[in-house]
Image 1 (tube, rainbow, N blue to C red):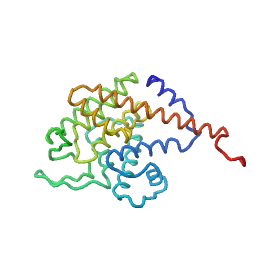
Image 2 (tube, rainbow, N blue to C red):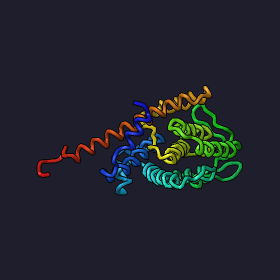
Image 3 (tube, helix red, strand yellow):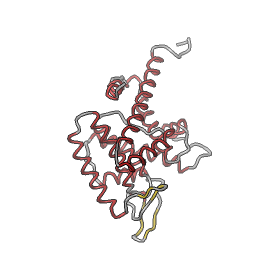
Image 4 (cartoon, one colour):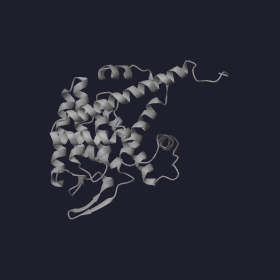
Length: 265
């Protein structure tokens, strides 16, 4: 099925039939985004934490804090998208500050102290595996250039394909700049979802079980200087997510029609 058809089918669902559908959709996005970054909470534990405030026993407190911070950051970008807020360095820094609010650390560098809870850009060079990211002194101008490009394209991206590409490409570009000491992946995926929400498209996800393929797609696009591998990967993830949500909704809808209840009802 074409992605446009999947989007249309998803948007045609009467989500008012399930008052919790949207809420648990957001919990699901938070669960997978934080799991990609090391959270050990299960999906059920994530739901109980965010819905009832129940911190899971036997799990690092940091993982629960990471989860609650991400959930708040996700709601923030959704609300900001309704206001059609322009992208800026300070906006991206605010997203990161929310992501790192309870787990951010203090980094002491030769150029001074960096408080990761404030959304401050890094003041040192970083690497992940064999990948070195841009020098710290290039972070601010590169991020500013990215923001300018996004804002231009927010105004002219008329087709669903263009809008999806803008969201995926912005995700790729921000995580490749790696402007922060921590929270780059979560912040980049939230920026992607800000853009999708801006265009009133369904949100996207990277599934935790596809982490290896995610990293491979990022690295292949960087090595080849071609966004196609990452775009293709994200399109597959988007299709997988929308298909899942549509099936979940239909399952709920069938129960409302009388399936799955005991005879006393």
